[in-house]
Length: 176
Image 1 (cartoon, rainbow, N blue to C red):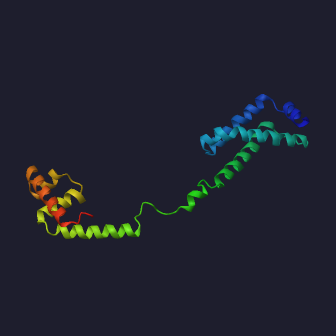
Image 2 (image 1 turned 90 degrees about the horizontal axis):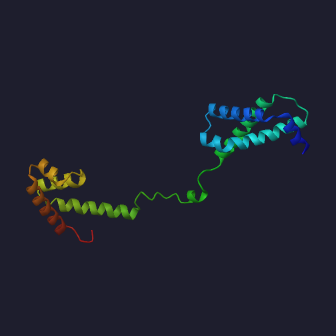
Image 3 (image 1 turned 30 degrees about the horizontal axis):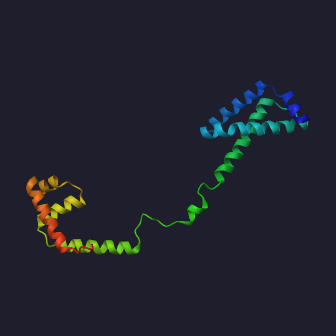
């Protein structure tokens, strides 16, 4: 109790306000994150006031505002370092390291087998039909533009596309 009374006697509201403002300016200058400053600076200043009270109780005389800023800044650095050293990823997330975006060996084997069957079925198509389907599915061009590149008009491209798809369906296994 006596220490708090001593601090209240020694530190005016104006000095505390100056110290708070000085701490915030210093933290901004040192490029601390803005959200962190808003959240943590008051706590750092409260701890600094307690540390300052301990210094006063020990009989040490110092410049109040500057010392409060220095103590609070050191506290802020320790707090930030402690927060940054904590792992941000929960340990449960680390246990599951499988890359779900890559196919399993079975899926990869099935994909390769499908590609082999489609290539074999496409070999039964005419050169222009193969070119049309390649442009349509591999280059992601619409049928009209793919037909134009092959040398057909819109209706001819649609007709040849339908015929080519029917030929492929006949060649391919329905389970594919």
